[in-house]
Amino acid sequence: MTKDEIIAKLIEDAAIVYKADASTLAADTDISATLGTNSLNRMGMCAMIENHFDVVIPLAEFGTYKTFQDLADMIAEQDA
View 1: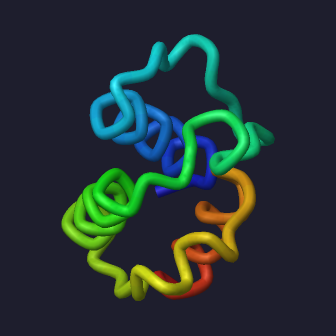
View 2: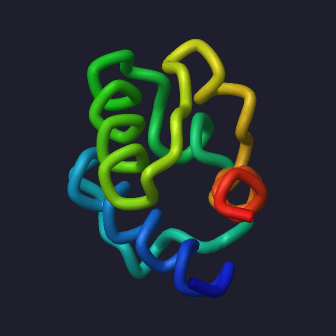
């Protein structure tokens, strides 16, 4: 899976979890500033990432990834 495909899936998942318009989200979207820091949403996003990409992302670490690009880089790195 390419990073662009990973980003597209992350944005699709975020739109579902955060009830956001996917067309307003991009690779460089600041996740916390744009979508908020609600812990239930973060937990849902972590679960979707783990299920779709077969990677482990502790909830406490989710906030360290500022953008969807940052998340995609981490996923690609773990998948390598």
